[in-house]
Image 1 (cartoon, rainbow, N blue to C red):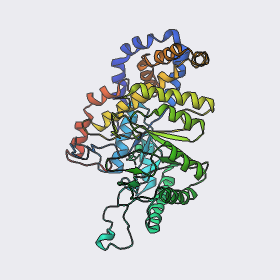
Image 2: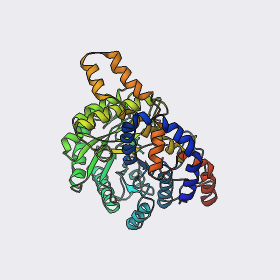
Image 3: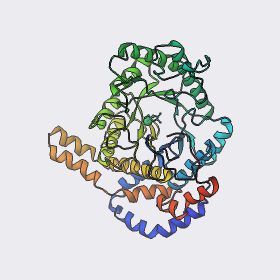
Image 4: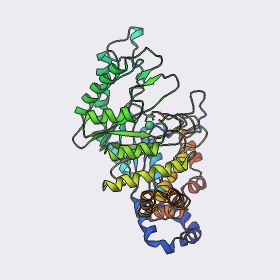
Length: 434
Ligand code: LRH
Ligand code: MN
């Protein structure tokens, strides 16, 4: 939906005085505030094309209405988010859920909303609709991924999966993307089912064929995941195996950290610090979770963990003189059940910006002194002081300077966007994806 800038301007005019009052609390820290605000303006978070509908859970789905029916409508929805918060300037496509049949038109449409294309995602965890199944005497055209894809015992299935990934790269090149994300549901459900060593070697061989097809300026992100219901093992099951694949593949291969893909109580901020220190951290799928891969709103369950992750990111990226906005893949990966997908994504972007802004406030010189002095209390106080600082006025100011809304969620509701989308698209539309 094209948002008339006047609507944002009148919303901001209404909130200006309250905003200035809140911002006033930062007047004696102007220099630091300006640094944080500028970094926030530059910091763009990619929105997943597969999280614009109400995917529900495996037990039930409760559609909210007005869901995008096409890639074009998905781009319009991400364009709306970006118009509201000026921090969602990219869309990450999942293929074949969102095949850009006319890439030039798709690229122009996205550009008209100020959107770029972030990493493209392959999908060898589902058999493609209409693909004849081998059991049903299906033709050679489509082989099933029932027993995996890049790890499969049948070289023909591995071949098909490699071809799919190369096709996804082709779509990405046409859209101006420069990264491929590979997440595999490959693994096993029962002890004895899989030869772990062969599965690893076959997956590596297949990834090497995909790696060889990458354009020079591209990256491949190997996304790991510890478990899914019904799984006994996953072939890319943790950061260690992802790091192994990325290291064996070469300099264009990196690990991708999806916050929901860890065993309970994993210390994700430590994993991030180590992968960054090795120069093998490629990017993130931000979300939050209480138990499994819940794909909930970022920062909604463990906001301190999100802050600690950004604290390690800033420490590690600055140590490598990396550009915060450009040098890692910042993407959300979520699915929705009881919330409006667009409201949920607005909340996730805000939570990520807040964690980043708070982590930028950490006095790293004092923290290092405290650590070198084993002053545990002082070190903890320095971190918690930053985490307990209300940076919302800085995030709002960054939005304001970038032409966005002071309060995107409030404006989304004031404008009754969901009702407008239901009016345009209907109450029963179903978006492809999760
Ligand atoms: C797997 C995952 C992966 C995507 C999928 C939609 O759980 O996180 O990133 O391919 O979700
Ligand atoms: Mn993910």
